[in-house]
Length: 190
Length: 83
Image 1: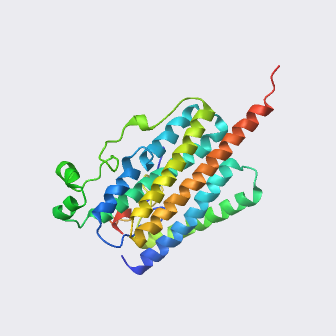
Image 2: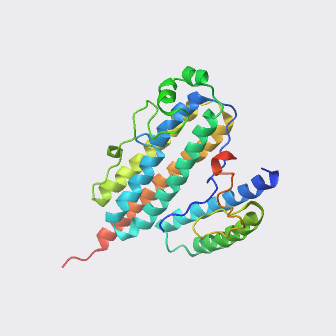
Image 3: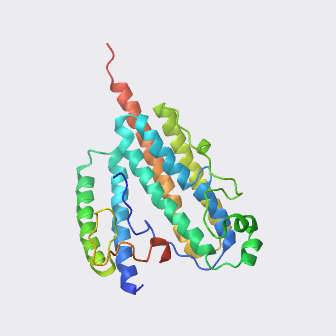
């Protein structure tokens, strides 16, 4: 067995009111280029060819991203579960409703479906880790833009938690780069 | 769910968050002895709290990481997005 499911969120998710417009923005972090699905799959996939010293970190951050994916899904579910078709239409989600009803779908805020081309894997450790640092910074910025648009204090509390996690992940990836540089400098060549 | 459910769950979430943070930190600082002691302390705390929680509210984990009552209560609600 590779991953086990635990019946709990990493951090509580509350929403103040039914608000499908916010759900539409949040889909960006569900199936968008810098979203949680892309993050989890990116790190999980890069692990196989990265140096042993950083595989633990990639495994753990990938796992944490899956728990963030479930938090985003919970937000979207709670923001839309009581919405009428009229409310969904007013929020710009008529297209979504026609295709999916209230089911979640891996797409970005503009309705573009998720694609593997969001995920880079170059096989060069420094290139891959810099990619990961950039991905975390982009996800952090996206959380900030959503917080700026949101007037739901309960939701914003959870979004701020997720924004802070991107900062910690970015820091850890930067440390991973330094670990690899150090390892390279201590290698003996004869 | 009763207030007790939310209180216990939040306590577990807080402790498990400390463990996640220490785990990621230790991934890049594997020689920090004090941090490893904290990691092991919080892991023990988390395990104990989950045993208490599961006695009252059912299994937290699947595939043999939690025990089951009769009938099989892993499939019972609430799921995380329902609370």
